[in-house]
Amino acid sequence: MSEKASFTDRVVAAGFAAGWRLVPLLPRRPTAAVFRFLADRVWRGRGRSVLRLESNLARVSGLDAGSRELGELTRAGMRSYFRYFHEIFRLPSMDRAEIVRRTHVIGAEHVHDTVAAGRGVVLALPHMGNWDQAGAWLVGVGHPFATVAERLRPESLFRRYVAFRESLGMEVLPLTGGDGHNFGTLATRLRKGGVVCLPAERDLTKNGVEVRFFGAATKMPAGPPLLAVQTGAALLPAIVYFEGDDWGIHIHGELPVPAEGTRQEKVSALAQGLADVFEKGISEHPEDWHMMQRLWLDDLEPR
Figure (cartoon, rainbow, N blue to C red):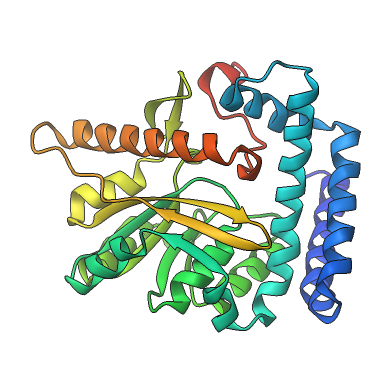
């Protein structure tokens, strides 16, 4: 790691530490306004992340590149993204009953009924809205769960993020650098009737399953559908979004495992089913989709 990158990582880690310490002590509306102001400044700067978000939103919205409408959608996307950070700094100090009360959920029965029947649940979701708040809601209604987290730099920031999520009631496994038994651990939780929540529209392992997504090829993680195939758990797609000052979650019904075919064919079919549900949810709430990385195969840089 370069000296400059190391310094930047330390600054970012210090900023997050200050956020978790200071933001809960300040009034919500003024701090929310500050985060919107920062979002607008970043949007106007048109850095690499903003341009990538704009390109991704052009795909999912059909808006023309360079159009005023696409620019406004991208600004709304940045405001949504910065709202996420404002909220995660406040979440640990928020009343859990308030989190549950202000979360408007469609399809919660899909989780409740499946767990009550003794089956595990794999909740698969895209990077939308405030997924940490959605996790706090899930714990708040009686379903603690396990998840996997991407390893952030520096290590101090990763540890702080893990501690934050654990404080909300999640069991957090590192994507890399752990004991290497994540799949087995998650499968064990599911076979005991537990709940697992996993981001599922961007493959971080380079071993993903190819799907059609908004008319083009991309790869999605094999983990969520494979866990459903291997354990018999219900695979439930979930869409998370902001609803005014509150939050919305749409939990869709179980994606059925095909009765015929090889294991790989079943996993591929389930992955495509997830892509189809995600496509509809992102189309309905494009400003809340926080995808600032290359996603589609034809966007990836050649090796």
